[in-house]
Length: 278
Image (cartoon, rainbow, N blue to C red; front, top):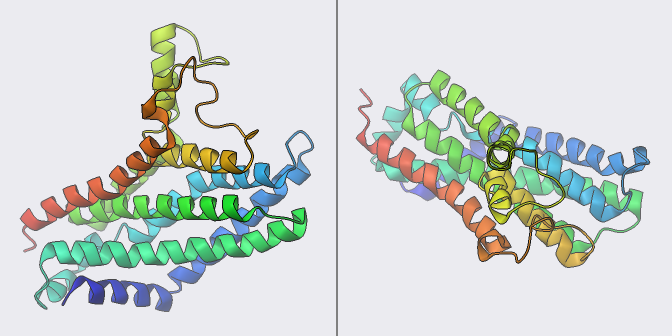
């Protein structure tokens, strides 16, 4: 059995369990609602690009939930139930199982996000009358990349632990740390170094710290993508003091997102290969 067979089975199981359709419904409803917020709050910019940026901010918190729920039991669940031994009895090596699970669950999340955003895009088009295609496609692609990164994290954790409860506990902790509470890291570091909260301008290392989480890197890349369509839209480096160094340019945050995708998978695979499944 090769990784293609495992990935296909994961995807087909998600369709049968209605996980995929749940992702589509959840994403389309939430993103559609965020497109409407600028129109409902007079103090906010009511332009379509501002709405797209707002949708991405919600996505940076919600997509990790979708990805983690879709993938945190990919291996740990079967390992605890004993069905993983049956799968390994069909002679795939353990790293093949991890790769197949990752690709299958990633496909579920990516398809769900793309279809959900497409449906929300129809709503945005009807409400605003236009939807810049390049900016919209860039945000959808980056959102899919964020989803894949958190699938990589979830599958890596699932491969590294032996029980559902451990996978769930670590998954919740990573979500809180990487998607919800990460902004406290640069804020705290700045407060410790400067003795006061950050003001209108910040040093480059502050922006770098913001972007070292998957959600932070995603937000920086989304801002750069929308800025490419409308130069008036702020980027993550807009408040940087002086010359913007290379390590806070968009490619650096793309590297961060890639590292979060691959790193946990590699660590999880190494631990899984050494684990005693008996």
